[in-house]
Image 1 (cartoon, rainbow, N blue to C red):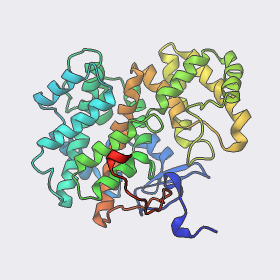
Image 2: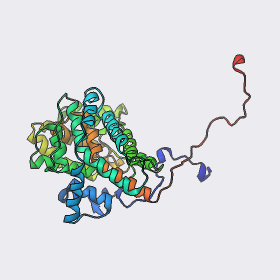
Image 3: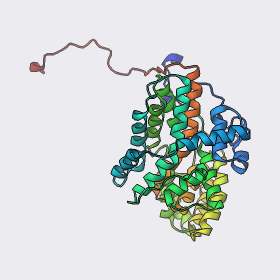
Image 4: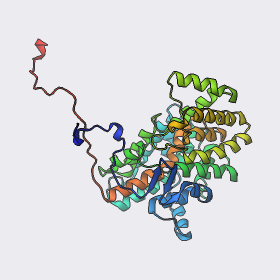
Amino acid sequence: MMQADTEVHKGLEGVIVSESSVGFVDGQAGRLVYRGFNIETLAARSNYEEVAYLLLYGHLPNQKEFENFKATLRSTMELNTDTVDLIKSIGHKAHPMSVLRTVVSYIGAKDPKSNSTDLKDQEEMSLRIMSKFPAIVGTIARASKGLNPVRPDPKLGYAANFLYCSTGSRPDAEQEKIMDTCLILHADHGSNASTFSALVTIATLADMYSAVTSAISTLKGPLHGGANELALETIKKVGKPENAEQVLSKMLANKEKIMGFGHRVYKVYDPRARILKGFAESVTHKNGKEVLFQTAEQMEKVMISKLGEKGIFPNVDFYSGMVYDSLGFESNMFTPIFALARVAGWTARSLEYVKDNKLFRPKAKYVGEIGPKDYIEIQKR
């Protein structure tokens, strides 16, 4: 039997690398908890700024704390001209996630405190990053279409400002609520790949800009942040509800991965997907895309009938892409919107970890030749 210290846990599957009180994912019961609050409660009654405060500071803010927090975010929400120029110069030709990664790194390079390892400075960097994200992602969305930027409005909330900076129009109450809820649902989700990247980086006592840049780089991969783009592509490929059985059966027979179904943690229905399904139904109906939702709903029925007993159910990506599409976003913006939400979780967990910091240093099992081999001079090889 292989000794414990030589066992390989590929992808660190099941390996506990840290302790956290920020959030908890119960994959067997289908629960997502932020600091003790069920995600359903926060999605129904809270807003993103309040949830971000909860994740960062461990409790829901009172009125004074909340107003001070919003004022802090508003104070640094605007982008400097050079940052806007950078986005405009590359935003029309690079993938939005590449632009986002570059912009956060650029802003960090200009911050005089970015070399500080002081916890208070790291917290201030977190808030500056978070405050600028609606304008950054919104400006990227516009630059990708060749449109001029829109300055954020200090009278608008986080989600509303993002929609305003993206579209140039102030959202109505329903649009704001939908986006606010989407951001809440994506704000944190355990020790996922991008969050782990942030922790690995912050553990070296790098600055928060570096940690968030690492997280963005990890989120860019289609196995993590790009899944909702691919899920929407599959829904559009199926096309109509009556096609679901035939198309999905063929994909399963060919062993194709059907994005939007199954989860590394959830073995029951993803609680975030339940919430987004309701929004997807209403927003597609409002925007004349009912067939998209009806197709997805039939796909869900087919997949659950075939794979539900194996713990394969819709995940958050299955309905989120449809919601963003119905709000008018191009599919290449889905992952930057994910980052817009997850920045709260990345920074909250990074600040938590660095308080009791330990550098990550995992092992790799060597499977190469032991040797020693004879060295042959290059002329004789």
